[in-house]
Length: 256
Image (cartoon, rainbow, N blue to C red; front, side, top):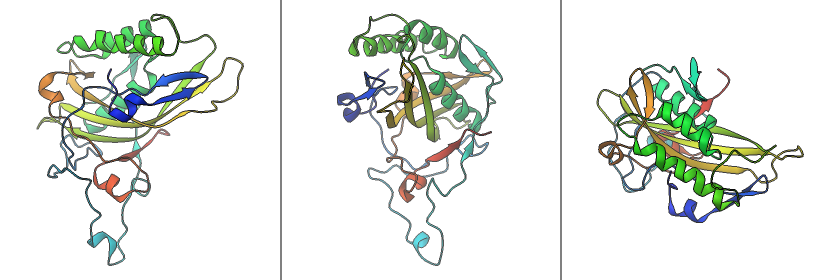
């Protein structure tokens, strides 16, 4: 796993008394595009690539029309996995919401501080066409562990639990048939200390992206070069931002 931008690479945040590096997925590069997967669609809404965040529409600010933001728009009702294997969530349908829900479930359940568990999950979730992804991401887990003063291999610190909550998503189909999708995830991560009590300094407002590929009846993680080169990069997520909504950011609803 690579950090998603230079700022994240430099930053460290305290989480349950442990310095944790902000991590992302895949290599930086690409361009911005206005596109989104909504409901059951598997193709992006059209939008030309742009070197700058999209400006608010003039028509949206006049005539009494609502200037839509992620906070005002309907939240995405996530689908639940219907099965699991080695701690990996499975059983999502082959459509846009299935891809988004699979990506969210993966990141919320990923054993990012336990290299053995992470490997077992990745062996289930990673596409056979991207085998290097498993060793790459396990190596990143070990790097994080060493960076916070833990042995390179082992479980999470005893008594410490973590909760990752994805708040928003931005989905873009990378193929015409919607079988390969890039999903950006905006998330917070909280911890519980060994002695109990909440996290004094949770990791907030982080963003990572994953590429999901429909293969063998499941959404799989992939880093195949032909898809990595098609990645797009969003404007910053803000629930009150008109540009964020125009760029495709959607809140997620965990209640369903």
